[in-house]
Image 1 (cartoon, rainbow, N blue to C red):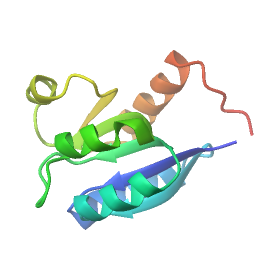
Image 2: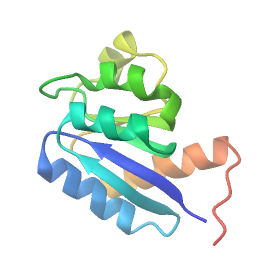
Image 3: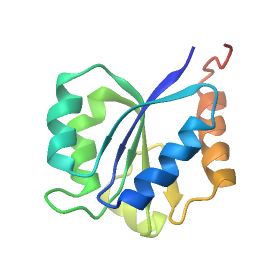
Image 4: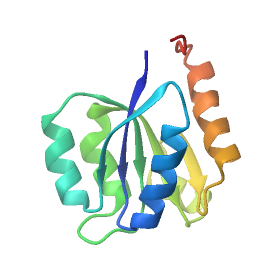
Length: 126
């Protein structure tokens, strides 16, 4: 069993970092990446539910917090990956499950994923 992931970030290096972290995790599978929030909105809205949705905040075309409102029903967990302070984001959107400050370390990434899995009693058996 694996959990599906999608990344929406307008910086390719940020996508690459998260891609590598997801690939290194035996129970996560990257289903899609987007460098444009409008494309992400169209594709994710029309597709299956995603377990972990990683969103940048500052993107051209649509902020990650706005995108989150549109995709909330399609994502089990919304994880903001941003250089903004967590308290600033909570003031805009208090409904996200996790925040990863950029630059994202593998330790912080793994800890956040494991915490969400444990708190929600999800299985990680293969």
